[in-house]
Length: 155
Image (cartoon, rainbow, N blue to C red; front, side, top):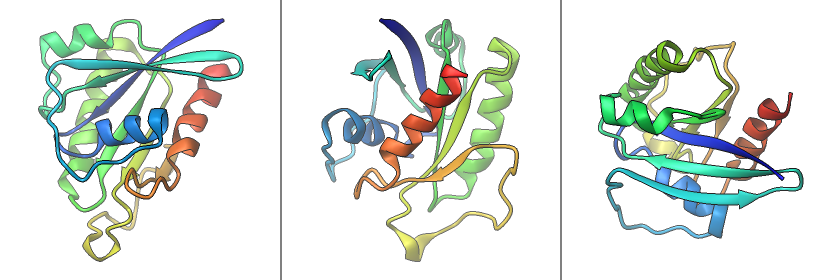
């Protein structure tokens, strides 16, 4: 069976770990736990095993983090929909990934969409990007975000 390395990329506290936990174990925790370094999980699908690298979000793509990206087939770029500045950071991180790895498949997850009263995203989002509104808390579009990325990897 084929394995594909997927990286979870985004600013601090956007919900990368919560999305992975919801996707892998169908669980959600209200508590915030900072990721230190990288945590690797796997999800076996019909024709591919996704190796999910949950990389810490320190808002910068440092040298150590660049080494975590090596061999990535794609990534989930995660934004906190209640903090508009995390979209700006996501654009920066995408640019740095493009420089380091070339353009590889990705999906943008606008996470925390269950917090509708706190929505803080611009009306115009990059039309050339695959964007899904997700909620690790409710599970909304979590499977779909990873499925969309897996489909991009298969094509």
